[in-house]
Image (cartoon, rainbow, N blue to C red; front, side, top):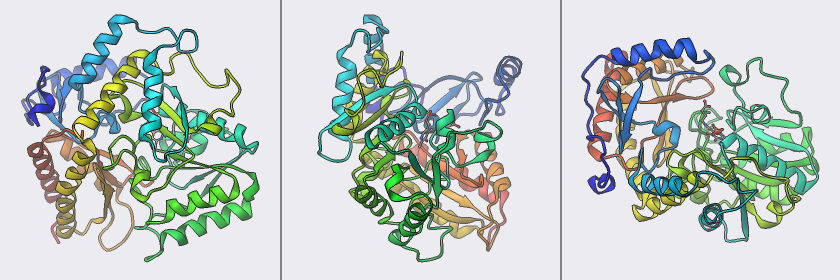
Length: 452
Ligand code: PLZ
């Protein structure tokens, strides 16, 4: 993997602990943080970053941590990826901002062309660019409502779609996202997700879809539905992979009902699951698709892409924003996409799955606390339960995560019940780092959980 990193001053690709975690410099920065930053902004790992690249994050105390988080599925091409850095440098020196709505520039158009080429389906597509995933989702709802003349939006249990007021209404989980931030936007209806580990054993995707859609028909009415919005593999909700056929059945129902099928691929998109998009695995073609995170190698950019007739249903001036499709972010996106193609990072994601899944399954065999191992590509998770039950064990999940952090491996948690350990390595991570991180994970389980 050295080729991926050559050309920049990339940090040594190694796990190296020179102080306790967090070290003294991070601890003193945490004190400044506590004094200056709102207590409402959380911290997974109280380690301050100095630099990062490939599969490692180097902190201000000189510790080098293995990154199994990618800044929540963002730096899929690696942190400070060489081509992204070059493209950003060049663009930032030429011009930093004009506002695309005032005086346009080619980069924005080129990103929209790439989105039309890469997203599922070969129909005519158009895009609009935004700053955050939440903003892209908000705009998907705007477009769907305007194009259909309907209001209801159907979402699923465990869904995560953002933190703005409309997207909080779409997000399922109360703590910490929604708690006392309401009232929330109306005309949002939540139905059961296909969640194979927690559904009746053997429930098929078609059955799970029927369960959800019958509820829509009786409680909302098919003719009132503007859109059904779904993450094809749920992210913050715990990497829930619906049973095969579920997505396709929901998409078909939308077509028949005249509703817009919106895939939120903000976490799953851009090679993360081993394809350009998670919908590709089942040949599902969304009417609208939201993307962000992995699209621009760490620069803030998000997109809404969809059928040209839907995207063009909006009156001129109806979509926009000061910074949406910022030229520096667009340059980063074009370099990110080129890197993904040149290095075949979808294949890299599948290779990560091939390394990690057997190790996670072996770990499941050795303990009584891993109820489920799931995910796709470089989006993998284990769900922790009390032995012999499906009762979530969030406390243990937190202990394992902290044990990994203390040993220099960045892992994240997720799930409605807080009991999912999720793994989102940069797709350029070296095999040796991945294996070492799995060794650390094994050791954390061995220390925290009695062997079966
Ligand atoms: N849709 C599927 O995963 C962002 C949220 C982290 P923004 N997920 C990380 C946190 O605690 O805030 C996300 C997502 C899906 C939408 C979003 C929202 O994207 O760029 O965070 O607004």
